[in-house]
Image 1: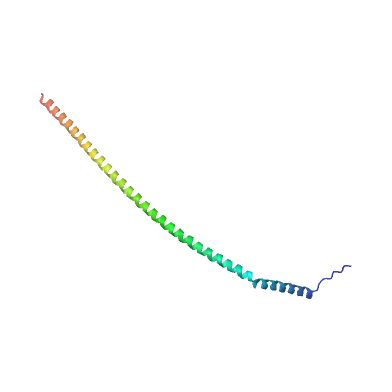
Image 2: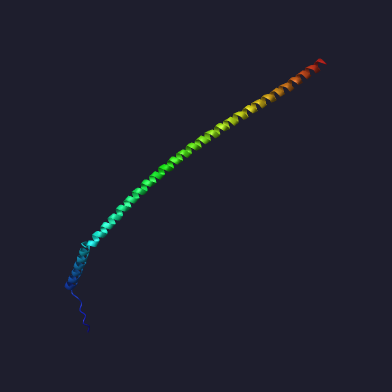
Length: 130
């Protein structure tokens, strides 16, 4: 038959414990290596630089937003002034138009009154027999 022999429970346990011990020593040795500390320091430096850049970016954004808000406020003020000026000009035009309309109505009324008076006078003359 074959020369293979199944390992018993004790052999399997001892080989598993040896493998675990070897893995633990490997990771402990890697954690104490000098290049690990250097990489951690490099990561910390990169993180610090990122935080500084983010803070600078946020400050620049706040400045830009404040400038945009000021510009929007000025634009709104100018728009309001232009609207008020347009309303004032329109009210003057409306006043002139109303004045012209009143004068026209007064002239029409005077002409109508004159025609009415002429008709009355003509009727009076007809009644008198002239």
